[in-house]
Length: 342
Image 1: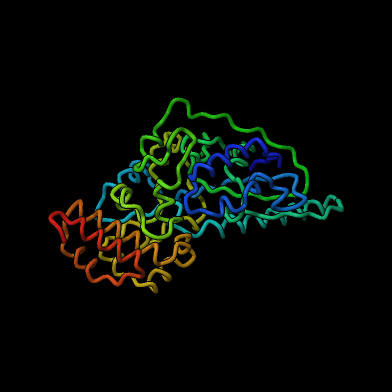
Image 2 (image 1 turned 60 degrees about the vertical axis):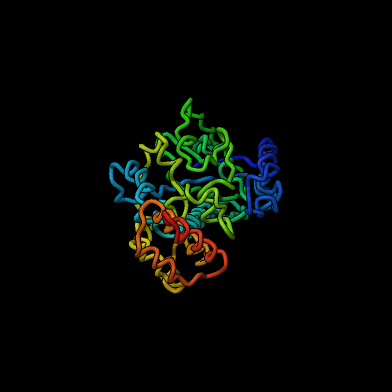
């Protein structure tokens, strides 16, 4: 945990420059709320302190060599890969529930001490106009890495962030110093060169954005680079040296579910919308809808065909029932990736 104040006016110029550059892509909500992200008291009137938290999500049964294993997954064209954070339960529910319990504990402590304080506390977990990475950095949860994610020497970057806005004044905790040094491993590892410069991410090129946030056809120029990634991308994190210190979660919530990761293309192409809803129940993946999921799977299958022609995958693609025109276009592209034509 850490504590940040609510005066973040020095962060506004950087946020506005990022928006002006169009780096937020189709995430119109980023621009829609304007500078409210950097003004906690506008989001929740009366807020004077922000309690920030991080929660580790690396699976409890992750191997000692998990970084090397994950770094090797994109080269496995025969199987799809899902971002590590999304292989277990939806983190929004887990972390928000714990933040609410924390708010209740604070209220109980105030009552025990006989303080007649009408507590106003509201938890946020990636669900409102909150500048969470900035708050985390200011409160000492970690420092901003060159990939723009938060890093900590004893935990790497494999953790979720959450915030509890409070109307009680708490002493701010000191910020963490930057420990990236001259390292550029994350920048080099990005398949689409989305990290345009240290600390500057163009979401429009980011595979996590393209497979999760982006609606409609994925630009053809990025499809080959997406490879077998059907939900998110971990490349900048698996390349980061600090993640050798990543902590495993003690919670079973974040243990990997069977059937979501490392599936073969025939199986995934055979999923119906009912299959998708059943297999992603309680998962963060469900938020992208079946249409985007099917689009991502089709592009991944096309990349598999480009790497190694497979009559069974081609047949599955040909017999696919596209959920919409975007998926149909992606299927045609995928079939066109077979060396020598369809």
